[in-house]
Image (cartoon, rainbow, N blue to C red; front, top):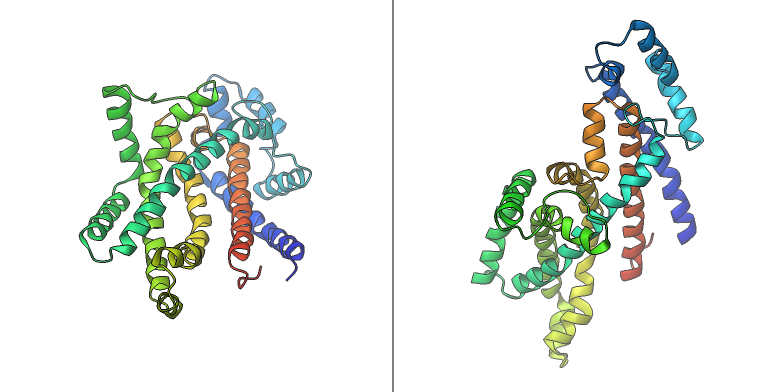
Length: 312
């Protein structure tokens, strides 16, 4: 299939996915107990004031009409206005999304080196002591909750040792790296074992294939075979899992950004859910869903680039 046609098809397929996400998010927020207007104006507001605010945001209409109005505005690029911050949702997303994107990319950069090293080390020493230790540590990393790790790292590295800040994002790029190191490390501890297990398994499968034995019998060095054939061919299963990992990192940002008070999309969503700020929650959820779709598209294209046998 032509690459441009494939991209167009995937983007068209994304429309019902985003529509479904918007319906589920809207329904869940509408069913959430609590009155957003009451939370906004307090108990001392008069019924007339509450009625005026409801009418301003269209919250006095039936739920179905509210959704259709939201959908109509969404088609024109209008995500609505925040009840709490009283600014357009698109403006809030423009302010907070780059922070979460920075955190996700930072976590990926920190994750890749240990994943490659540990996977190769474990596969080449299958069932040896190093392999057993790596696998046990992997299970331990998966068993520890991310929020507990985040609190532990904040307490030990931030408060006790004072090596890293435990809140905020900083003002300069070096500050960003310093402030987000502990949030990225907290998430990385959970991500690394998953990728190591996947890449290790793929490496073992490739190392046992006939072409490796044939290549060695023809005088090709083990290191050359591994570098030029075994390792590249083992990347596809890990790459396919990568899109799921990115989706997890976006969702996990809710936890680490709340613990470390990072002004990203995750913390914005938590604050907006507590304030019943419907439009912000819906807009942020749609952005997360769209990001995941685009990452999956990029992974499919990259898989075809690595292995020509994989056609988009």
